[in-house]
Image (cartoon, rainbow, N blue to C red; front, side):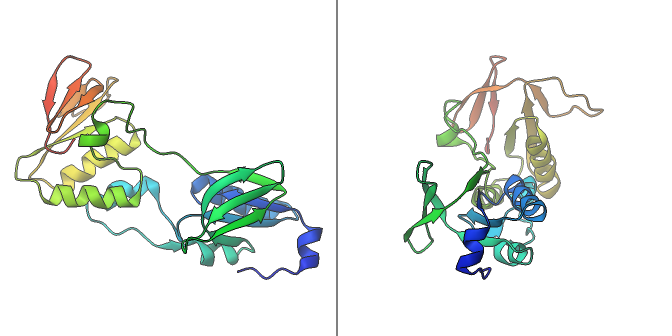
Amino acid sequence: MVGLSISQLHLRPHVVVLGGGYAGLAAATRIGRIANVWVTVVDVRAAFVERIRLHQAATGQTLRHFPYREFLEQRGIRFVQAGLEAINPDSGTLSIRTPCGDTLTMSYDYLVYALGSRQNTDAVEGVREHALTLDSLEAAKAMHQVLLQQRSSSEVLVVGGGLTGIETATEVAESFPQLRVKLAIDQPFKAQNRSGLVHAFAIRIWPSAVTTSASSKLPAAVP
């Protein structure tokens, strides 16, 4: 951990950045460069996860390992591995829980909330029970195990035409050529090769199919 004396702590405001994702790391390093403050990053993980590369983990590729402590402390920033329990703005404190289960109190002068987002698996009926998601390293590894268990010519339906959806569909098609991959999107997709595209959005996920807004039911072994 970064060594700071009591006098230093009193002289410099304490900025706590909650979340070590792209936004959290960018905020912490920039604040540390331009302001005379003491910066602490709090994240439940010990290492940074490249979320934009989770589609690669889903096909069995190993992502690079970036330990927070090594990266941040080289830049004069303290790292604390813990999960957030509560924010107490009146007292300027946080309640955090360490991996050992201990609950600690951390004071702050300024707070940056950068905990990121999670997929809403309840927005579409059946997603939580029957679909795979791709918003964490654990989810990506779980998807890889499911893909390995699929029979030849099984249908893999990727719902969503954003960067994650497109990258996932193409990566799965390349890594598992024996599977039939489809991409369901809700807007026309401008591409030269439109084979396998479905212009509709999902309204219900079933164990082995997806009901779309076009009143069709698409088969899928891995929705």
